Image 1 (tube, helix red, strand yellow):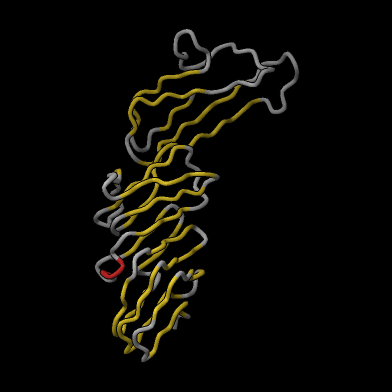
Image 2 (cartoon, one colour):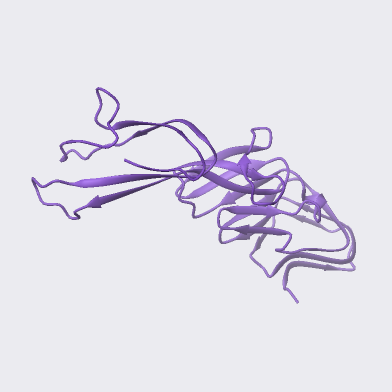
Length: 220
């Protein structure tokens, strides 16, 4: 049997506030228990967390397991059919992402078919060091799309007065992006020679990439 972070047996009208459940085997189990209330409860896993902000009530015999609420790499999931009392506003944190320009995407049908999450449901709050924080008004499956950037250089190291070639790889992981522009900053020791595609006229470091859709990979 799973070891639950909170296990309530034959206890009624208990109040739990500001608790963080640190990746237990199961989250919460109640048996013959009524009117037990939870406020500001965080479900934490190494890939991120879900914080249910309002007070919610768990009644009778029920379990909140990782099959019903889970945070994996770039994914936060809550089964609102099996956990209707948790279908409320929440803060979601996704960690260890590699997106330079993240955007929240949503899977309404839980069938791995994601779309951009509208502002009426999702609000991106912060993104720093690979950790992205956003809030939601209801639950299904959420993830992050956007752009990841990778820069490859050759040779490395490079000698003085030698040519340095490097490639910037832009990967659109999910979502459709419009009017994408890439601007790179060259080190002071570098003299620009040429690029593919050509940069914007009168510049040597600004590239118009246009509209990009999910799965697009562009190299500059």
